[in-house]
Length: 431
RNA sequence: GUGCUUGUAGCUCAAUGGUUAGAGCGCCUGACUGUGACUCAGGAGGUUGUGGGUUCGAGACCCAUCAGGCACCCCA
Image 1 (cartoon, rainbow, N blue to C red):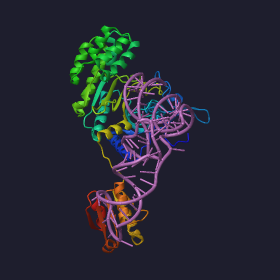
Image 2: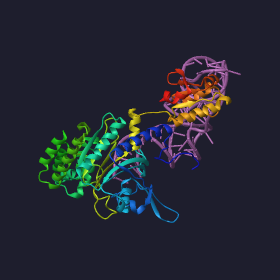
Image 3: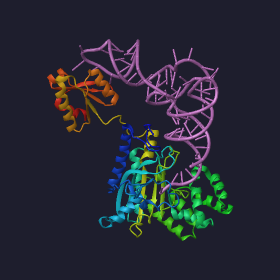
Image 4: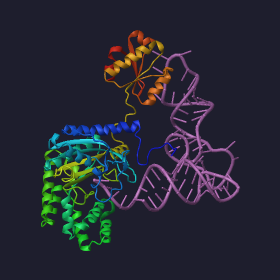
């Protein structure tokens, strides 16, 4: 391993990518804080036993290792299990309901693909300790506000409820054991179509009658209230499903009252997600410009967070995939694309003027202008070229003439215009 | 984890198994001792991802490995 490279599925984020990533992070956390969410950060490494047993079947994706003392450790694979640990560990210090957000990396040893990496950053927002449908609605409102603020031109959040899916399976005459297979099949509906789902279910020994019933229920489409109405009629004998539909109705009522634009969400009975710990609402947000999968997802999981605390703590939340948002924004060419952090580049004309240039740089920084100063001398042409290549907007020239007159030459490198400005007005001129 | 595919200069890509692996863009120097982005002249830059093998001869063919992409599996 003498080769210089990073680990498969893990990426370096060079400055240009980082600036967009930080914009994404700041936008999301800004929306969260406007809703009064509080920040939380936990270690990337946890005791393996904290993370184990929360996934269901496949835990081979967890990165595990031992420390020097032989302790079994693991890298967190999401930020939800650490949240559950924190809620139990600091129960006395946390006032419920608790709105918290967390932004950081998680790790999964899966096969990398576009928009999917082994180290990935997520911004999680959860409301812990409330079962109100308003909490569910607030989570949807937050993601809608955040994606709008990021400039996504069109996106739709698909809403469903775990007990609606359960009701679909029950109405089809299937037992709970077959349900998992059914969920996985119908979750692929948008990808493989009705025929694909039919084939997969038939291959899985689901009866043709049940398949027909499932496909009918799952293809109900339209305005949220209409979808809910039709599902209520078709699932009228199933109390759990009816309760779930009432819950969705309440959540949608909350969305309306919160002013979430109606074109931004719909009820989609075929949305399943990996259902292992969701107990209520499930949702996914997609954009037509990204066929690879959803932008983000989440739902309500009333049992997981209380697992360490020893009692159910109803929680609803979501996770923004920073990497995927970044990839999609690059692809769609949305969001700011600054070349550098600096706005001004102060040239150093020569040894005589170095002190003036350094002082000017200090004034600019004190005035809030991000400023680069030339370090290695060279002709003015070379310095301007460096400024231009960095992508800095303004070059500031202080030659003997300017110093004598108490002025600074401001050159706009985007067009080429330049003008002399009195020394005291430089900050204002760049603002 | 399974299958397919790609890997050549900083970037995008050429090169029938056959001379010293090329081009565009970018980069460096100069024309330019107070002006970048345009123009002109010159220059640097390569263990063809890595390691084996076949062959008189391999960037090309074979095997392995690493990395990227795609389709499965999975997606907490």
